Image 1 (tube, rainbow, N blue to C red):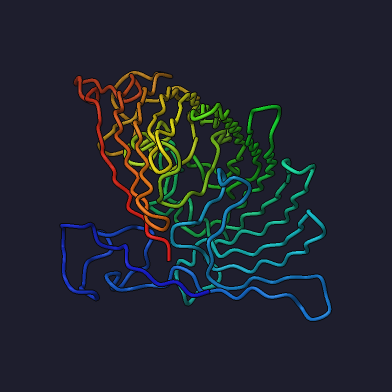
Image 2: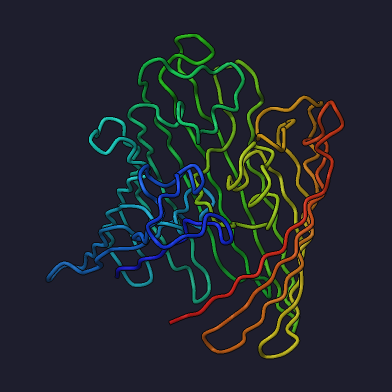
Length: 380
C-alpha cells in the first residue's frame, strides 16, 4: 500500500500552491526540517507471508499502535517499522522494530527506537486479551533535550550539556470483550527505566515509574448506546526523589478522546495529545440513532490532575497559581450524519470549563474554551 496526502497547511492561512515554502514552525514540530508544504508519504509498506512458512512480515512506513493506543499510537503520519508476526488460529504473536524519531538523518547514535514483543489471544467469539512489552532506546537522550519533551516540565532538570542515553520499559495488558450486555475495552500500562545522570544538576540516574489504566464500556439498548470511560494516568510528584512517576505516553497529534481538553487545550501534564498523562478522567454519554443515517448524542467529562498541578494555559509551562487536583469539566455534543454509503459528515461541539489547575495568580486562566469541529469523510 502507498498513500500520499497533504495536511501541512491550516486552511485559510498561508494558502499557496503545493510546494510553497511554509516554515516548519508554522506547520508542526513533528515534521522534518526543510520544505514541509508538499505532498508527502503517509503510508508505504509491503505485507507478505514467507514462502512455505507461517510467518508474515510487514515492512515500511505504516500506521501503528500498541493495544488500544494509550501508550503508543502513530496513526496520523505513521512510522517506519518492521513487523514480524506469527498467526496461529485466533492468536497472533509479533515482534516489531519502530523508528520513533530519526533526529539527525546522518547519525544512528541519536535515534529513538521502539522494540516490542506482543501477543493477542482469542478467549472466545467476542473476547480477546493481549500483552505487549516495549523497550524504548533513546541513545542520546533526545527526549530530554528536545523541545517536545515532557521532561522540560520538571523544575530543576537542566538541558544535558552532552548526549546522555535514556531507556524506558513499558509492560502493557489489554482486554476487549462482551460481558453480559456490556462491551468492554481495557488497557493497563506499567513503566520502568532511567535517564543516565545529570538530573537536578547531579550525577545520579533519573528513574521512571509511571502507570495508567483505561477502561471503556458501552451498552446498546434499542436505538440508544450508553458509553462510559474511567481512566487514570500517573503524574509526577514534583519532588527531587530521583524519580519521575508520571506516565510517558507517545501519541500522534490526532484527537484521542475529547475535542478540547486533550486535543486543543494543554492538559494537566502541560501538553496537548498526551493521552491520560497526569489525568484522572470520568465520562458518561449516549448516542441515539434517530434514523438509519443520523445519530445524535454527547459525552460529559470530569478531569482531575492525578498529582496536583498548576498549568499556564497559554504556554503549557508551570503557572503562578496554587496547586490543585481540579482540572475541569467538558461537554461534547455530537451529530453523525451518514449522507451516502461512502460519505459521512460528523460534527462535535465542545465546551470546556477549566478548573483551578489553570487559575493564575493574576486571575487569568478561568475562561471557558469552546470549539466546533466538522469532519467530512469520503471512503474510496
